[in-house]
Image (cartoon, rainbow, N blue to C red; front, top):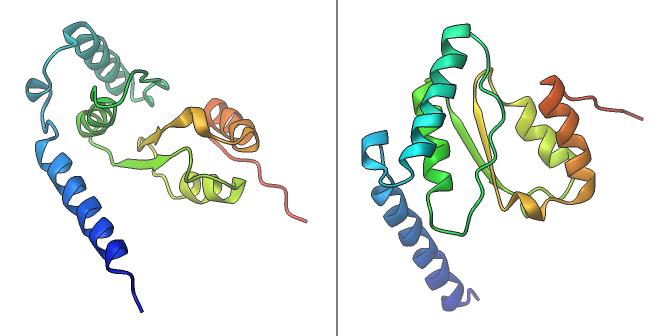
Length: 140
């Protein structure tokens, strides 16, 4: 028998996600505050686009609810690319990270929420992937 509390939690989580998605800024002009940060990001984005190069890696740091996820979506939108959102707690094996990285297209944005919770083995795989834009996989 299915526990009704599980269904209620699931429905509440879904409603909460839909609410946050509907409230999330859809344009830079809708993102209030942090004018200096927005200006710096837009300069970096436009410079990368004009050089036809990928945007340098960006670390968005701060307490929950200040717009880090929203900024990642706005960055991807400005680049004309997709954003892939995951969580540090969701990446428990190197294979989890490899699956995400191998499905990214050039220019895509990968946003790892709670990145400080990544297991050390995943961190050690992520660093060279970020530096070299590639992934070394040892089989066998």
